[in-house]
Length: 461
Image (cartoon, rainbow, N blue to C red; front, side, top):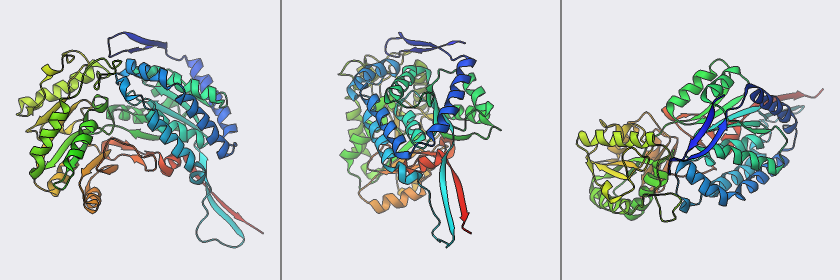
């Protein structure tokens, strides 16, 4: 089996090298998971939840070690402190609602002489194929509720963040969960496809590219394995004429450039009411120029490298194409000395005079570039926001909550935000439309995705 290698975007060093699992290791993990899951499903929900909370505590205790480790693996600056605020928020919320979400539901029309209800049974064995951009948050969205619901879990983490899987395993082991119930496996893409095709897992959750999602679907075809897919995005924002402009600028700059733009729900295109366009644009550019691009292990750095040079080259190509078609760039890369062609270090960029003939406005960039367009009306904004093959989130900036709700009903997206962006509320279903994917995580619906309904119709004689 080949080695899986993590090369740091910070300086090109080899961070970790791990051999891919052997066929015997994979078979052993699957067998142990099946045995452990049968017993785990009989454990009361409250006890399962308590065990997952112990896992969370064990993970949180490693934060000081994890933050620089994560910066080395994928480039996020250490000044932002990792992912464990959101990690804890999500786990605690799912723990709070677990018993109610998993409890049997009787029909509203009770009938004398009958006991009738719909129970939630665990699916069995859940495979989590996790990405590198938010390697803890995206993985725990499925892992924590899957375990609480009575499932076993196999984790296959991205090669760029291969050490994250080991951290999950260490925390699970420290928390004392049953042996074999959770297993981190180092797998190649081919091994993952073979595993899916075999029908050996009952559900697979994948976060990644559209092409990756298609590969997952092809591999699982005919196996009847259920899938949860969070794929590409091109999340828009609309700044209405009545918006609080300073607030919109501050939050949208962060929404566009945090994590070097490598956020599933990061803002990649902005539409601004014509009457507020100049004020918004001037403030947006000024704030963007304050970023410090550099070594993510330096506390002064606010923008680290992208996770891989090829990701930065994609953004450079999209930007160059837009400029060739008449777009205007407002950020001078010369003011960001760390920006180097052929490297993962890429300055933030703000583009205007853009339109939807340009890839930078319609194709996923997943990097530190954003296009900004003026619009004449709500209707034009909605039309442009919907002119996309993706739909994860959309953000509306306005003082009128009724208008946000009205417009939100017209926007083709999984989540509608008002006066915020780039956030995941664990009380709400995290889902997407069109080529962004299928299924949902978190909220009670997240538990339903990881269980199957089982009806009981019991007649007394």
